[in-house]
Image (cartoon, rainbow, N blue to C red; front, side, top):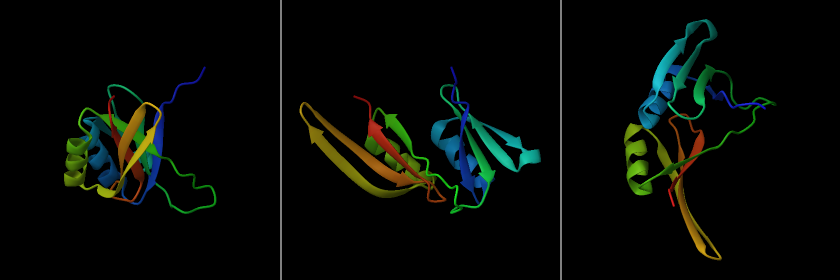
Length: 118
């Protein structure tokens, strides 16, 4: 069995990215100066690792994060105040369900979504 230890973000400014996500998720920040990296530890779930790496390389694989909140609109407002940008809000309906989520970008353009708890 394996466990997800952290999610790594390639970024231009690890400190700025770590600050954004530390505030957004209420995590605790650790510096890893020997690796030019920053980590945001979280009480639950994987840590987020921010490393200065070039984007757009042949091995660059997109990572998409999905988050849930008790109040999606309030969470989106808070995230935009911290520096995120809204791409769009989408709604999907099927038999017996309707889901609405907002697609955002962090300060360096990495995409993530916020939906509401059901």
